[in-house]
Length: 183
Image (cartoon, rainbow, N blue to C red):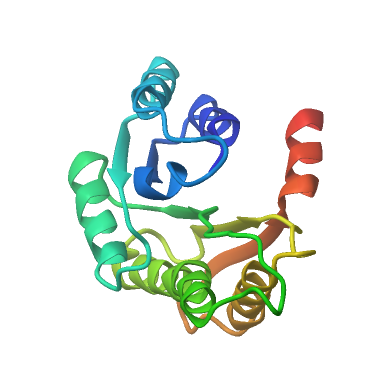
C-alpha cells in the first residue's frame, strides 16, 4: 500500500503492518532505498499505531502464512486486510515470456487468493466486522501480464467468500487517490 494510505489508516486509529520486497523494488525505476521501511515505521508509530514490516516474496506459496504469523506476533489478531501488492513488468503480447506471465499470476492472482484465504482462516473477531480492500491500478495498456493477472483476480474475488461475513471491495488507485484527497 502507499505510504500515504498506511499513514491515513494509522491516523484513523488502525494498527498497520506492511510488506515490502526489496529485490523487486531494486529492479524498478524507483529503486530500493533501505531507509524507506524504517521511515514508514516511524511515521506509523508517531500516529500511535502498533506496526510491523515484513519482507515478503509473494511469488512463494508459503509467504502469506508467514506474513500472518509475524504480524499476529507483533500486533495481534488481524481484522482487516488491504491488498495493494503487485508485480508489473511492461510487455506486450509478443514480448511477454511464459516465465514473466507465470510470475505475474503468482504474485497478482495466486498470492492475493492465498492472503484472503489466510485472513478468512484466522479471522476471530465478531462476524461481519472483517474487512478486505484490494487496491489496484488501471495500468493495463502495454502490460499484458499485469492486466491479465489483476483482471483474473478481480473476477475470482467477486465470487461468494463463504460464510465468513467479511466485507470486501476493490478500488482503482486513481479513484482511491481522489477519495483520500477529498476525505
